[in-house]
Length: 403
Image 1 (tube, rainbow, N blue to C red):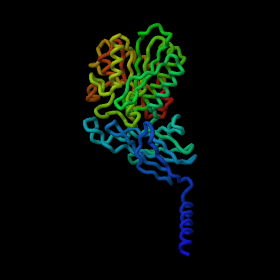
Image 2: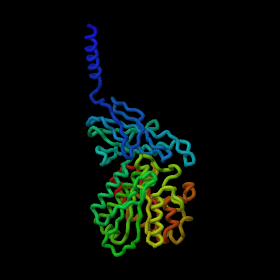
Image 3: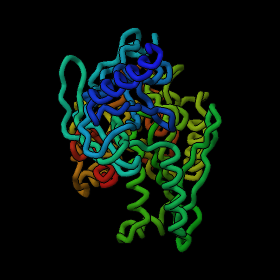
Image 4: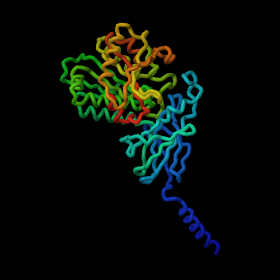
């Protein structure tokens, strides 16, 4: 009799146990098995819908700032909380801040970015900070969602955008700058109307993501490309009279693996502008800039970045006076004045500049715009534009409007 009762008791107990589980306590899944993703899962409370993560970037591949993951196993309209803790891994010795973890504020934006489909991104409501972490609350629109430090711009995403803009516009050509040390393509677009008068036009060069975590700078680059192919009179004039190059991601390797890039070993891309660059993409950009400078064609070089969490405006970094001849300083000031006078929000722009001189970094003279200023033709302008990321308007639309 016992052997017949035991299966019945087992089935009955299992049914009771399952009945005690809430209907919305399905197993949550945190997925990072895709391009650009990064998250170390610390805890998942399936019943409460609460997930704890931290950035999972390797500090030797740059500051562990970036986090990005997909959450699956959700029910429509389910409330979910995601708490982000800063990385506890120390930065590499020999770099600024080496031997201790990065300040947590870098990894904790006031509002994270999230998406229902992995393509269209919006801000969360303001997160709640406590005990060295920040918690973002969301209501799931479906069975999965994506959440990230900021709106992602992976190599695949930017390559798709470049393919689309080149297909739609006869003035746009996609080009390969080089191949990275890890075998990935670094691509860009050239914008130049075939109706222009000369094949030797002045050159505008825009590049972004020398620091891979600064995803907003790729969206700024994308906004520049979209504006330049638009119908405004100014955009048409530039297409007809200038030759414009845009490289949306320089550090493609670390953008692909979800690492930070900044202060990577042996040094990051924006400390690599020397006579013997470590990164092929820096060497390839240098060669083009030198060639144009020898032809007296380089007009403007702008390196696009995102700044510190406390910066609430966009602003320019400029080379120190010792890195630029006195004759060129008024020309640079006129350029910056003109930009400021014609700029409109959503992200405010300060006319106050900051210097990347000797007090800024031990490798200050190997920063991109400083190297360009020391090697380019006399009438060129080379600067770095920092666009604030920790604002409500630091969205894909806000970044793309920074033009």
